[in-house]
Image 1 (tube, rainbow over the protein chains, first blue to last red):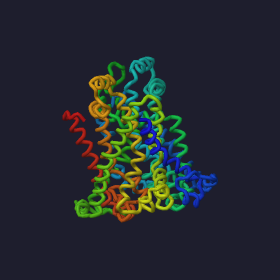
Image 2 (image 1 turned 180 degrees about the vertical axis):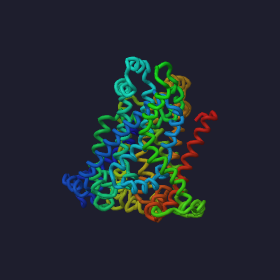
Image 3 (image 1 turned 60 degrees about the horizontal axis):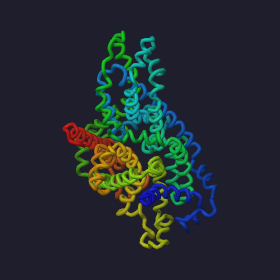
Image 4 (image 1 turned 180 degrees about the horizontal axis):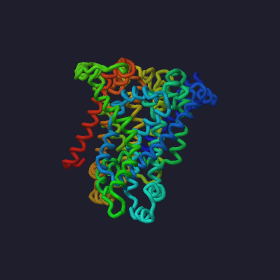
Length: 265
Length: 312
């Protein structure tokens, strides 16, 4: 049984290991032995890819995108989840249904009018414009996730705070938030990773190379240099290493976040 | 706890609060104030452009200038458009493949993992890693591994599998769609393993003990206990697979852009090309509406059957 599991692990990890080897080969070395170890590691491939693919600017733009998306999604979803689980909102069930429908709708349905709307509003080719779109598409899932955490918190704590004269804002920030922060952390991780890896909206809404996040910066580099797989591999590794580090450090929470998105019951 | 389950528990959480000593109206207003940011971004980005898309699907809009109402013209054009037929067929093939192969791989991997004690965590992490790799990167991993002259095919040919030499997996119209699906599978199946495993761990262990006492073999345990035990998860992921299969875009755009010769074109790439290359925004909108209808029909059908008491 462990033999089969090891084979499956090889299938999952092997391609990435070969990709890392390719990043360290010379081009003739890669053509001569596509499966072999890099005999003379070419560390300068990473420097070349970094410069030619504009990875520095890409990673900086992606950092802005990821942080602004994660924070915004937490604020937007936290407020909405609090309202739906704790405050009197008529039609709360309808909102939950609406959010479910929104998550199942294809982005392609609203992509075309949104593109022209964003062009008119000056939000096309603008990181903030992309961030607002990410807020809208990642918030419904985060709201449902955070709400499920909030429903689990006993109401007695809040009642006590209200009797002591605390307003809604104080109740939320001082009583509820400290108890549901794992939900926020999970939502932030899922939204942040999705923003970092997202491709279709980034390639549609960001055009100038100095504003591109790392995903589309790498894509345009790869499309221009398809024959030099050593540099493309090095660039791809630069993009993926921050995610791998974050994932290995926080894998339980990542898995929990994704599991809640895919399970019923 | 999944989203569809949340739907069911919703009713419990909105009980009216008694005796807080404030006017009800004020609490309602505060409630809406807290909902406002979500509603505003949702309206601007999703609801209004979505509704506009439905309107534009009845016009000859190019993306610039005025739009003229053309009735059902775009939809009639869709019915007779061979590109649309091909794309829809590819989406259907994609759906059938993803319902069969990755689901089976995910169930297999999760079942094996659920039966081991040591290193379970380690294998789970290993299988999940491809899922956190960005699509652009996993696309380029396989683009280099499958390249005809510098890829693993060439390497394996040198190791004694000569029929793998010089195959252009992404450039051959007969192989391209299958190759893209293969690459997507590599990234996707570990996600299924993790979710199926979490679901399997919730199956009552005493059922397995009873089955073992009755002399059931491993396959019988899987078929009669594990699979019925995780059926809601399998059904939900099946529904998600159907929805995502009709929306697929990233891998195809990144690896082949719909080519060679339209052999990997799907609704997503067809829409994109019409909207941003052919200046046929109205026609593209009608493709978007068809894609949305497919999603909505899938979800409603699923919810309807569940409400009718089907055990799915």
